[in-house]
Length: 418
Ligand SMILES: *Cc1c(COP(=O)(O)O)cnc(C)c1O
Image (cartoon, rainbow, N blue to C red; front, top):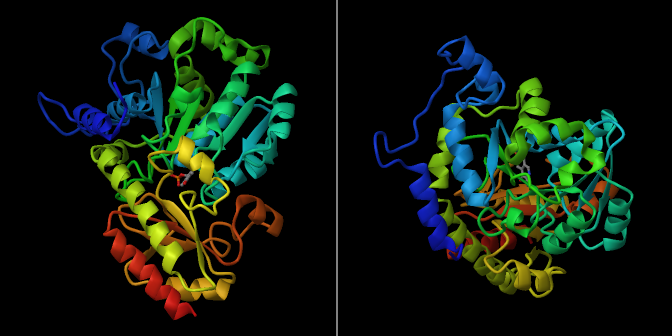
């Protein structure tokens, strides 16, 4: 079946809702769960009986969210977490140890950059970052045996678009785990189908849309019967779990080696709110991706001299060809404005009437934020350049409002700025 927006509208409402009993997902707030007897307790702890153990390692409301998102991403299973960073740190801490190296390709969200380049580094995991198309570096690092490749489906906020197929094929050849942050492009990019092993999301963003629930989720493929990467020698410390749990091994690897010991677990109420968002995700993604293109085109035509708009749908963007070939349904809610200086950017932002200034993306409302004075304020000039932001850079996340009204708001603010 063709996985278009009609497909996802059906899949999401049918899976979030129930036909019998309560139609909306039920919230189970209990932190602990009574066992039938000592034997059942033993079975639950061994992973042989499927019943809740303790809310830090799983909860029935989270389990419902996990099953819906696993279906949506074409995965075998998922783990809901306390935030998007919780999902990424679950994966990095479950698979990496001191002495390992991570390869990071393309643009990155600030928190992911500091997780890899500060926190994981502090624990002895080294890294390198490279441009989306630096295949010389990518192949050299894969040959040298890096243990994980991390990239965003669309760089936030650089809007660099990677060649996911080519990276995935190389990761298959070199038996290396490929983790893709798909926060910006749920439904329109499906990394597991392209060959990724793990997909992570900040569900706080597009999935919820309402800014009412901080959350994240990691989605996993099934362990294969043949040519399984995880059986490569470099993953020797998880072989015992892979051999015992077979198909579903990604889940116990992450639960036992990250969630159980660090507790970045989702809460039932947050997961419930995330599911309310998921019911309308396909409708919102379809509308917003159309609006972004429309708004980018209007701004490109009408912005006064001294401020420019950047989006891969525009012919001058370096990734325009890849946008046309690989991102036919769009590349998410972001576009960016460049105003040259911080003073001018502040003036534009403070003249906006409809747009909300906040550090979020993928909201139902249109949002904007100056980058170097906020999320990227801790980074040096070189890192900012690599991550694609400079003093005049404003990140915009387009919402559900009338696209003409959104464009009009930016145009009137740009006039105020000059
Ligand atoms: C926001 C974001 C994250 C972090 O998610 P939180 O839910 O804020 O922890 C990770 N990756 C991307 C691409 C994001 O936009």
